[in-house]
Length: 218
Image (cartoon, rainbow, N blue to C red; front, side, top):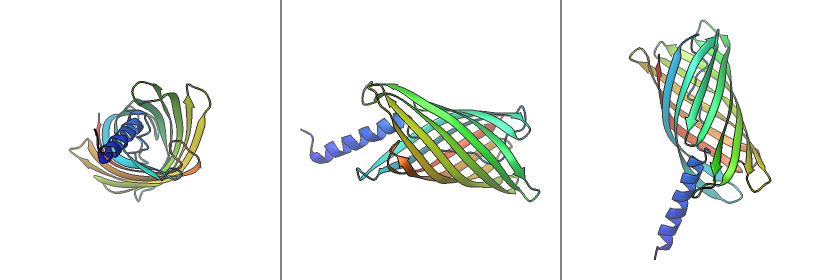
């Protein structure tokens, strides 16, 4: 018979897997305010970890996120991207608003994403979606190094198959460093912190994530 300690560990592990597999694990950016040139492609992958803190339940649930993405420059100062993470997908657009000769850039990023789970195993039978707006500010300090940061707002909707719905609004910020090497590779460590302003999707509390992305230009 499992001991109480093992039961608690099993519940914690199941909750973490449920969050990650349900698509709740990716609140990442891994982007700067410097869009790809027209016609340029970029492929990327990332691995990170985080925690979902729920205030009413006084719980801290760890999460893992693994994602792959592709971006393409489509115009002057604009690119688009598609990100896949666990069972979820997210489409995004980035447009540079301002750039200076001193190496500063400002861009607006918008994203729409979601996931459909069918109730198998510990996953719910539900549809969830989100819309995200980010303002990215980048300071390029050398041809190989750029620092980026900015505010992030995410609105989420959860629709269980049994009926009803739940919503949530998160506000936070991200910061990352892009280090380029080999002419076409980029290493991007990132930290983000988000706080619930309204509702309880994905939690009524806070989300903290840290990870590392690797991208290659084509």
